[in-house]
Amino acid sequence: MLKKIGSGFIGLLAIGLIWYFFIKSYDYTIRFEANTFPGTINQSLKLWDQTLDTVHSIRQNGSLYRLSQQVTFGDSVHGYQWKIKPLTDSTSRVVVNIKDVDHSFMNKLTVPFSDTDFEKRSRRTVLDFMENLKEHIDKFKVTIVGEENIPTKYVAYIPIKATQFQKAGGMMKNSSYISQTLLQNQADFDGPPMIEVTQWNQEKDSLEYNFCYPIIRSDRLPMNTDIQYKRIFGKKALKAIYNGNYITSDRAWYALMDYAKRQGIAVEPKPVEIFYNNPNTGGNEISWKAEIYLPLKEELHD
Image (tube, rainbow, N blue to C red; front, top):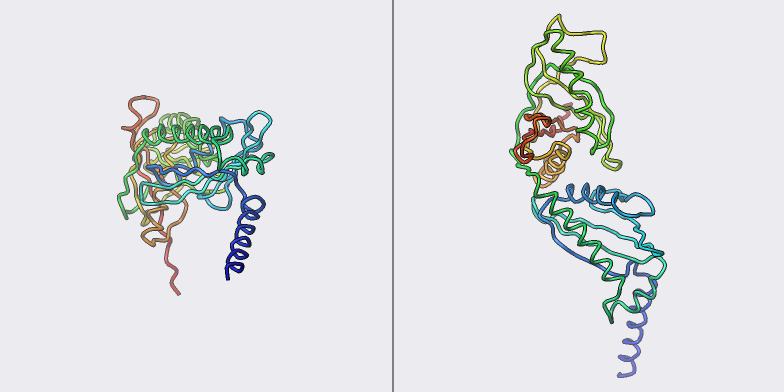
């Protein structure tokens, strides 16, 4: 009987060692919680990645909840696998599995018995990101309002293609041109500027959107320019209020998508944003306001 128990124990130990040294895909794990939703962590990781010496840009693995990167430290390459899990509407848990690509076996041998340089480097690196993330989330606020209608507006607009981070830059580049052209032709404005997203590639963080100025339709509108005209029709949507720099107003998109998922509401990933402050006038960014709408999916009727 004892021999059977001993044989079983040795067998389990052998399986465990084989898994630990040859199958387990990482050498060290770090866990932490963040007071924000997954989309903010995802976008913050991608911006932070640009400050590091990496083999390639951070990659999103089919979902905004999973990302991978390879960071160079001297002659070593460390792989970071980030897994993000929402806990509440304003908190998330992050698990980081880390591997030294060229020295994995030695790390697995030494990590359980000492605080290695690899572990110290890993903690410093993750801590650097955590500090960057906290600094960012202190600079904006998202408040979910609930279901409302996107207002109907006739708009003058220019279509733009950009990354999410370049969205505000595209607006600023075209703002003076559109507004001055309309003013020179005595157009009557009908509300603050807005954008209407027509395509959002969440894997590549790329956008196609219309940068719009709501106006009163008239015969005086300039026709032989880059400016186009259309009517944005009102529709039901989820609404949030965003306060902060408009460069990162897309954080509210992710908050609305998380809210929709929790509530079982089908939405179209084509946000509409209305901006109530002029960034050129400066001021405290947390006082800047934007209304963010995420359209509800229209029900198909037979």
